[in-house]
Image (cartoon, rainbow, N blue to C red):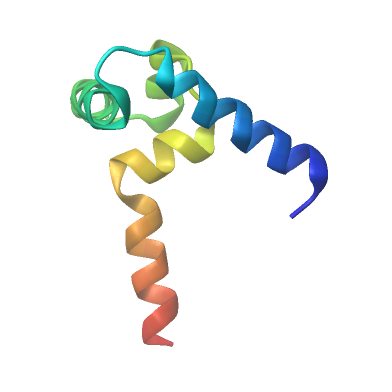
Amino acid sequence: MVASRVDEEISILRSWRRMPGGYDAISKRVNVTYAETGDIRETMREMRLPFDVVWEMVGFRDEMDWVEAQD
């Protein structure tokens, strides 16, 4: 992982501490927003979160990890 990417991930994780409810509460809001919009990019804009975070919280990352494990 590139140093700048690591710094970005650290900054995301630190920002969660400032958000009420932590990861679980944010994840629930992301999933509600995604259910309403049906669009990951719109969810990113509304939640002001990067793609990787929304991708993981919606569950696509788990799905992709599972598919890769099946190969």
